[in-house]
Image 1 (cartoon, rainbow, N blue to C red):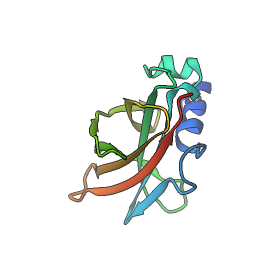
Image 2 (image 1 turned 30 degrees about the vertical axis):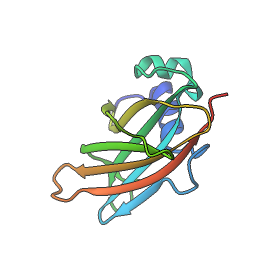
Image 3 (image 1 turned 135 degrees about the vertical axis):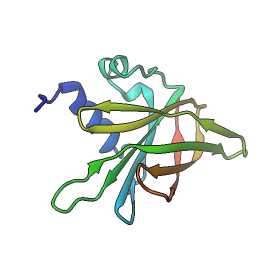
Image 4 (image 1 turned 180 degrees about the vertical axis):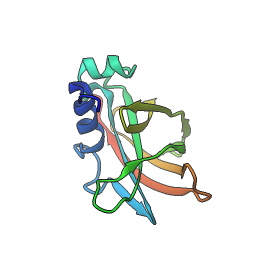
Length: 149
């Protein structure tokens, strides 16, 4: 078994359990899968974590994190690969596609996407995820406010 890395634990805590600016419910269950999602300004990441995962730290940069877990009785779920597509729209209707990349750390699988944000900007995210081995995609929509000053 691989020893748990301090940064891995910190990243997992920040990205999966941090509802600091997300709504209280940041996961959605679809049949046998659970999609965990959140978005935050990258300046809240510790510098070491940002360096390790090649994430640009800035109050003018946002990051979305998606994790897809398969429900397994008696466990917190098993991370699975997924095809993940993310788009966002601000309140003025301006749309943007957000490229994601897969980050594997031990058994954990994260889909991370970075994007620019303006002060007091609200983004409405649409996440499409198709878990590996599934013929169906699932969709999650949520909003996030960003404050850069």
